Length: 228
Image (cartoon, rainbow, N blue to C red; front, side, top):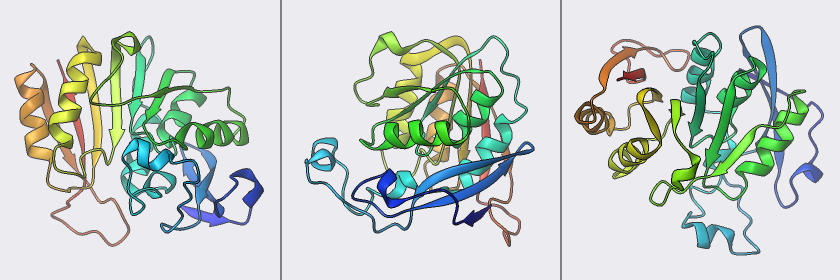
């Protein structure tokens, strides 16, 4: 992953300093408009307060994280024909763009008030057709959104309570024969999430791997597959 001073202007996202990040996946370079740092915060209309997002975590969606890159690499050749796919907690939606380029039926979802605007801008920058976006509150999902054959996510288990909340969401939105793929950097919620999905009838498989240059075994990061 690298960065460049490509065609990104602060005018693209008023109130924010942005940069271009270039991520090579599956033989394509994805040019992403990302927040320039983790201190970016602007909430003149009270969107953060209404969404319950603190100023400290507001900018996290707008970065390219190792777990997101790992998931996108997995999606570059994952079997997707005939599957309706949902990315949860999409952030900058790199995996959704990889899947869109492959012609997959993909919907990206997040609850961050800026996620949709960044998705639209980044899809356009990468020459992709618009990607369907769902403003998805995990605690109050709209059942009309589902069901999905494949649900994916990266770094979605980073807070206490996320495992139970996400497992309950999947129970409502997943097809009976669904597959779930989660890229997890090892923040401590993995075991409880897997236990919840096993209770829902999923078989679980985990592949540990390096998420960043310099990672050494035993790796904290892993790609988790669930199928029922």
